[in-house]
Image (cartoon, rainbow, N blue to C red):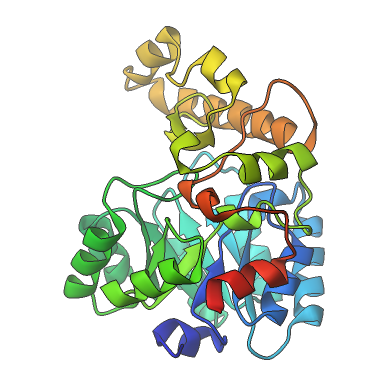
Length: 315
């Protein structure tokens, strides 16, 4: 499985264990590296810069040949910790950074000075061309089968459009839960895949057993879009509680979001409230559960080790 992605990161398989808020951690990424893939953690999983710095140092100590590690940065104004996180990542070093939800120009410039690759989440050709022009090392094509904040274009159409018009590698994000899915994305022209939801039900994930078991019990048909978490449509498991509260933003949120002067502040507040709600659902057993996941949980039939999940994707 030699591709542009495996060459860039010196990994055995062209797979990135996708960064997942509150799910990804050092233990998961360490096992991912041992299994021959790359692992990524959201910088926002760490409350302080000292905790982020400690995680980087632990991952550097755990790194093995054939594996790589990186961090995800939310690069828009809703993330007030962004600049400090970027500074720590560049000071300590990692193999790559994945940018989401904003302009990645500063991240690309600073990371490249530190010898760090930068991969940018994109949902269409317009933004992909923009990040290519800024110097991104690869585009992560977030399709309409991704978990969390997903795109609107099918995996095949998005991969083919981007690979036909870009000179940088394309990494497909969404709709991968087994080796056949990996092969399919590579067949469309992707240089690799980013896989998240199947790793929620890993023994290394520090979320509740209820969250993990939900990924086993529910399938692709049970994934719905909600506007109730971060203000941006997000995929969640359609639990009875989600059905009860609904998936549309409240009327007052809708009104405020249409006000140009207030829109930015409403989004920041909604983002903060949503992240706290997601943390509560992931970390505590409660009937008020809003669990983020994508349709690739269709292939999750048991709670497994990260090593065994990687084996399902590669063998």
